[in-house]
Amino acid sequence: MELRQLEYFVAVAEERNFTRAAERVHISQSGVSAQIRQLERELGAELFDRSARAATLTVAGKAALEHARATLAAAAAVGRAVGEVTGLVRGRLAVGMVVGCTVTPLFDALAAFHRAHPGVEISLLEDNSDRLVEGVRADTIDLALVGTATATPDGLDAMTIVSERLVAAVPAGHPLADLRRITLRELDAYPIVCMPPGTGLRTTFDQACAARGLRPVIALQAGAADAIAALAVRGLGVAILSESMAAHYRDRLTARVIDDVEAPTRLALTWRNTHGPAVREFLVHGRRAFATSDPAAR
Image 1 (cartoon, rainbow, N blue to C red):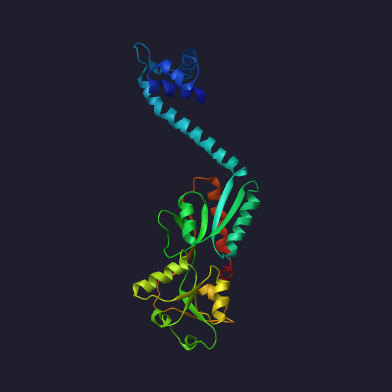
Image 2: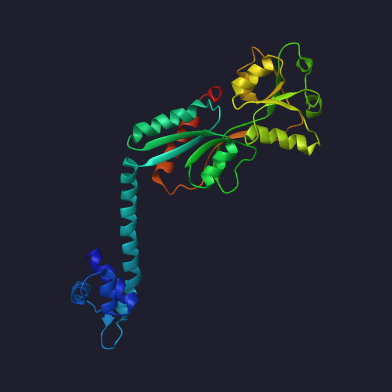
């Protein structure tokens, strides 16, 4: 029994005509008839009633049809699986990361993926989180590490890497440095140094302020935590950062959790689908890299 015989059998069963089936599988009618006769001899039963104008299934033919379809589907699945593996040899993977990213496990995952699949061309795009998310939705980016105010952006899958409270960070001598707790209303009296709109951290901060009817003065904006901290150290405003970001500058800035911003800001790896083998393979390396990394390195 051969797969082509099952293919011809299914074609005749669905077309109910040997001539149309032959046209469908692109061989002669006599070739289709001969192969089905051979299949019937192997099975020991006639599959079609040929006495009428239309080729109708016999009882044996009806019993065989679904099994024939399942066999052909399984064979196609084998072909797709092999095609996916060979596709990884020469493929592409577009990865996005939020501006100012210093999350080393992402780089570890990229390196591990490259070692495992050196033939895959990797492209890395740096942008604001909002634009990266739209790129993933539009399939111009396969995966992206983004800041987000929600656990999972609409229409995407996500793996949360970091979930932290927002903090206000100020240099020594600033009036807020001596407070044990800081609220948004207390921050409202000072200029703010923060990330630009379109970033997860900024979205979390803006939403919390809007919920309380506050409109803080965003004096300066920067896409990298280093820049925000450097501006705050020089007295140009109160830095709004996440807890782990602020920890890097504890020798220069005093950080306090903003008491009434309960919603965390998140860093998440996002993707839309895993149809492509490169995406699935990268997620394996990504999960491993983030699971085994030192949180301080993020």
